[in-house]
Image (cartoon, rainbow, N blue to C red; front, side, top):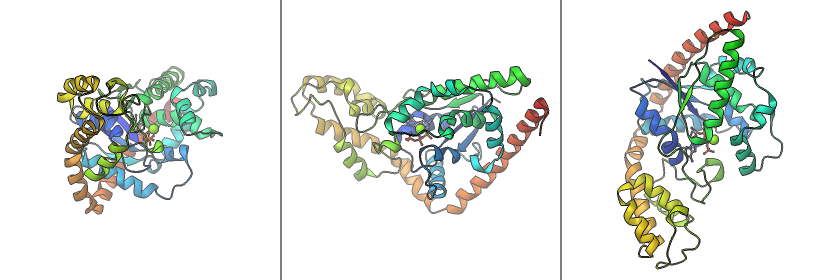
Length: 324
Ligand code: ATP
Ligand code: MG
């Protein structure tokens, strides 16, 4: 069976961008593939050194994963820092790619701009190299991610080829798997909904929270009041309707453009549809929050399974490289 490897950083509760861009695919693919899901705790360090919440955020993220339908039996979940082989493979891979190549990574350039990063760390520049180790340690064939991750998968493929041609065939060349919504825009109109930009709707938000957030969301700046003609294609709310309310999209488009539909009504409809979509997840979240031992059991068994595969892969690597 072909294998899937994908992960997320435990930096807080997940948002609907994570769901629409990646998680939805994780859930859909878990019967067709052997799935492994990484809690990328080392990667948290790329955007800040405060690790005080990392453990709580790990548990919260697992709750989100399980609440949306990931089955921990079929899809083992594990922490990157618990499986030391990630660090070792990262070191080896860091010799297989140039600094120049890493500096050309467009996702990194976006992050530097969005987060106003002035002094990029060596580790942040090498983020995709650690990610290559994360994927290839489990010989992942497919990586279901959002669009921002595509440059990283390309780097992973380059590293796999370089390793295989130098030392002998060990790694597959993984391919990305995108959903139909590979990049969900933020409430502020930014092209990407992102925790670090504070423009999110969380999977754990209740109806009231969603309502407040949508109320403040940016729409077409030229549509000031009901009656003004709007431009759906520049409106974030319209993009959410496309995902969460597809049946009404043609009507919303026509009535927004004619001015018959005002932003207030359009936002109320959007709020209700998003809430409808998230309601089962919220319900399941509540149940899981009451069972912390269950979450820890899932983590323990996931880490056992991951360690076994990581050990096997590194044995192969050592043998090919005549080290270790
Ligand atoms: P954020 O990007 O919100 O700051 P993060 O960087 O910690 O959070 P990652 O762990 O990098 O999140 O992303 C997890 C997965 O979710 C990746 O596959 C990423 O492509 C996907 N993803 C994140 N935000 C979006 C979005 N707005 N639209 C689609 N996919 C997204
Ligand atoms: Mg990210």
